[in-house]
Image (tube, rainbow, N blue to C red):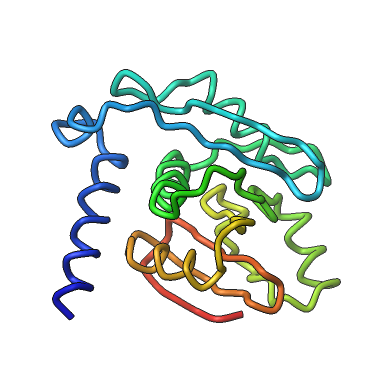
Length: 179
């Protein structure tokens, strides 16, 4: 239990520095870079979304577009805490590979379509429709290892979908489920 508490506190300290713009953030002033691959569109992005102790608006806009509802070409302002959370997971996994994005923002129309036509249990009030959720996997890491790190962050919702090979994270209340 002591090891778990140590790991949790370390991850929370590291992620706190990513989630706020204060003394903690200035102590970890390295550039924050996300490398993402959209499995549906085939697009790739490398975005430095945080540098010199501040978020980079132009990179945030690029990420917003990248995580758009590609079915309807609708773009939303993604919760920047989601970028920081995804970055913290990527860093803790020590992966140099791009993160595969399964789903980012979804319009209500797309969400309703997926609810009617898919068996994955798409939530009616999904955080994807609020631009506060991402479904992803990291190719060179075991899904259970990614799940462990995401759960240790205790920052929002974490869904585990082993049969579909992805993890869901969101910036809602802390909770966990298996899909």
